[in-house]
Length: 291
Length: 263
Image (cartoon, rainbow over all chains, first blue to last red; front, side):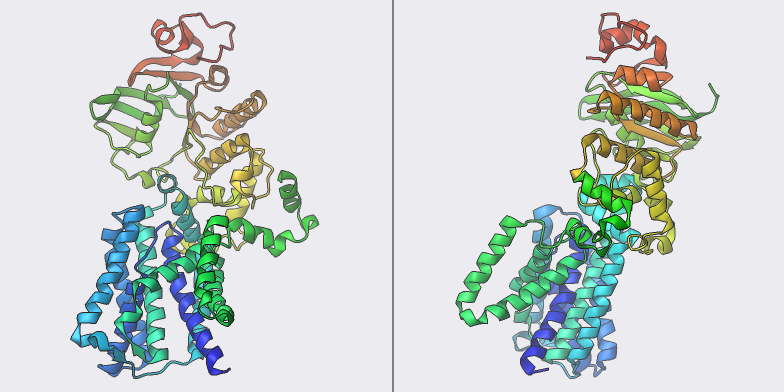
C-alpha cells in the first residue's frame, strides 16, 4: 500500500469508529456535538500513558477507552436532562471545554501537543474498525437495538412497552464515549502526535454530519457516511480549492433531498437478498401487493 | 360476575393546575370482563388511562391491579405487572417495520442481558419472530413483516397496535378508541377479534365513542363526565340512565336495541 493510500485507510478507520461512537447515541435520538471532546480524551489518555507512564499501546488503548467511557457515563446525566437543540449545545460546550482544558494544561503539553511513543500500524486500525462495525451491527440487530430505535421514535410509548429509556440512553452515551476514546487512542498511536487544536468543533460537526447524512436508522448509515465523507474530498482533489465549495453544495443538497440520510431501514429491506426472489416466500409477494 | 376484580380504582384524583380531570373516581374491573369506559370529549377517559399506565402520577387515591397497588410503580414496570394499552392516535414507531413494532411489544417478556443481546432481527426463524408472526396472522393481518408501517392503511395500523399491546401477554388490555376511524366491516372484525382475545382470558377495558361497538363487545360500562363517575353498570341499561342521557348520549331516546352512535 502506498503512503497516500495507507494514510487514507487509516483516517477512514478512525473516522468510521468515531462515527459509530456518535451513531449509537443518535440512533436513540440524542445528538452529540461534542464528539471531538470524547475523542480528545481517548487520544490524550493514550498519549500521556504512552509517553509519560511508558506503557505499551496494548495497555494504553484499553485504559483510554475506559477513561472516555467513564466521562461519557458521567456527562450523560446532566446532558440527558436537556432536549433537542439544548442537548446539542450542551454537548458542544463539553467538547469546547475539553479542548480548552487541554490547550491550557502543561501536563498534556498545552498548545505544543504531545509526542506519542508507541506506534500502531494501519493493520491494527483496520482490525479495530472491522470489530467496531461488527459490534454495532450486532447491537442494532438485538432486542436492545430495537429498544434504541424505538426510543428514537417515541420515548413515552417505549417506556409503556417496558423499555428503561433512561438506562438505555446512559448506556449509549457510555458506549459512545468508549468508541470515541478508541478512535482517539488509535489516532494518537498511529500519527504519533496529538495537539488540542486538532480536536476542534469542526471535527465534532464533521462526525455528526457523517452520521446524519449516512442515516441513523441502521448501522449501515455511519459506514456509508464516513466512506462518503472521507473519500469524496480525495476524489475531488482534482478541482483544487473549489472542492470545498462543491463539498458544501453536496451537503446542502443531501439535506434537502434526503433528510433521513442516505441509508434507511426501508432501503436496507428493499436491497436485502431475501427480497430478491419474490417467489421464494409468500411474504415477499405480499409486500408487492401492499405496494 | 366473579367477585375478584382485576383492576380497582379507589378515589383516584388528578388535577392539572386548577382543573380537576379525575375527581375521586372509584370502580372495579371484574376479572375476565369486557368493560367500556365512555363519556363526552374531555370527560377524562384518556387521562384515566394515562394514570393507570403511569404516564402521570396521581394527586390522590390508589390503583390496584390483581390486589397489588401499582400507582407507585414506574410506568415501564406496569406492563410487566400485566397491564398493556393502546393509544387514541396510532402510536406505532414510524421507523420500525411491522414485525419490529410487534416485537417491541415483547420487550417486557425479555428477561436479562441474554435476551436483550440476542440478535432477534437476524434470526429469521427465531422464536420471538415466529411468535410475532403468529399473532399477526391470528389477528387477520396479512402484510409483509418488513413492510413500513406508514405505508399501511389506517385500519391495519390500528390493528397492529392492538397486536403490539397483546405481545406482552397482558391480563388487562386497555384500548383507547380502537374502533375510531374504522369502517363497519373493520369494526365488526375488530369486535370479533377482541371477543377471541377476551375468551383467551384477557380482561378488556375499552374507551370508545361508537355505541354499537360498545353494545356488541362490552357487557359492562362506566361513564365519566367532567372527571366524575356517573354510571357503573350493565351496558344494556346505560341509555336508560337519566344522568348519562343528560351528559352524553343525548335526551333523545336511542332507537333500537343495538343503540346508536353517540354524538
